[in-house]
Length: 126
Image (tube, rainbow, N blue to C red):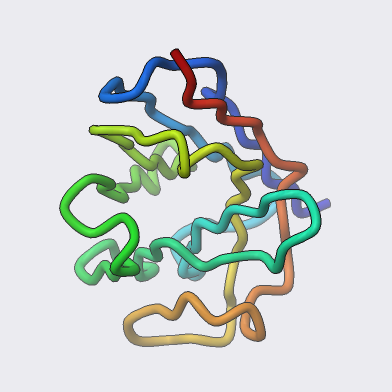
């Protein structure tokens, strides 16, 4: 059964860093682009970043560009989101998702993502 499990969230002070992990199981990660999203209660889910299946292409939204970095290790079936210079407005639930439809590159649109993790909470506060 295809499963994605996020971890690494927590409480961090403004300016701090966290690394989120997304562990994949039940499928061959190599064939899937992975997206990172976040959601604040009562608001729409926001696409932050994505990384292509091969890892040679990444994309970042303006809100996280220059601060967040996506990476992946297909052999370990892991995808990561390094988050630096965190701000209070980064507080949200963070999700990874798998896209088997986008063969080249990746997208942060919600539509292609069929499989989602359960989320991990990130709180940025002093």
